[in-house]
Image (cartoon, rainbow, N blue to C red):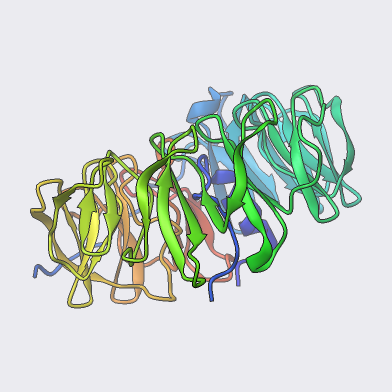
Length: 400
């Protein structure tokens, strides 16, 4: 089980949340890797650096910040540290979170129980189990009155009181009544919302003016991706049908029971069953493999006889099937390429490969996150006790 500290860091690290699904619950080539010698740490603390070049660095059980060459800029002294965002970094001491600037000066005191990094100029934080928002001076801009709150995205933030959720703007004005049982994030100008739980609940979409622009009539609603959203409806006999709608609510791809695996459109293609379709519903690629993943950066994961590899948009297998299907032992929350690298499993451990299939790290991690702004969060053990960040070249920004 991942500890709370690691979970906070992981959730904060994700710059793009996983796809939100607002709905009812449904019942070849061998890789040889040699471990590169880790770069030495320059232990003298240096002068301040720009925020984008400062990396959370763990030494033992204390965190500080280093530059890309592992030269310490802010000495390890914190119980937790997250990446800089909007010029400030979230750090923890004695169970409380505060914020520092690039020189290591505390600019917002250690008073918060739960932090989120700054997003769009504001941070969601909690005190005594109530959530609100602060600005970069530490001033409370939205009162601590919510039971849950999330970072601002596209100018709005999700908040919750009791079991009901809605959205606020940066002035704290509640743009939607807190009446929804489930809400997704705003994406492409729309957010999926749901009233009711279980099979009797219905979902639809609101715009940023809080208007229910697509009626709440669906069994399940995904967020919009490339102008279309995956939704589900029961037919007259109660069977669940999958289809896609556009932003006017019109059916873009007919509802069907024939879909076995349905994701979202990525790079103009939809992985469904054993083939890929375009936005007109035409089959444009049928690789004939056991499993098809979403395209990202021109490549998609496929499974053949229990092993994983990657194809390009012509269907050519460009990275041979050789990696393990992790099953319940998931290497990462994401399996697609991001910033040129993908997380895969070999011999029961996780690592990263580039687009040629070449490993950039040893296969030794229990869990890895995708790359974001040149770094990936990794865990050496499942309990999160040995964790930290790595760079695109495999450099580890941590040590025992």
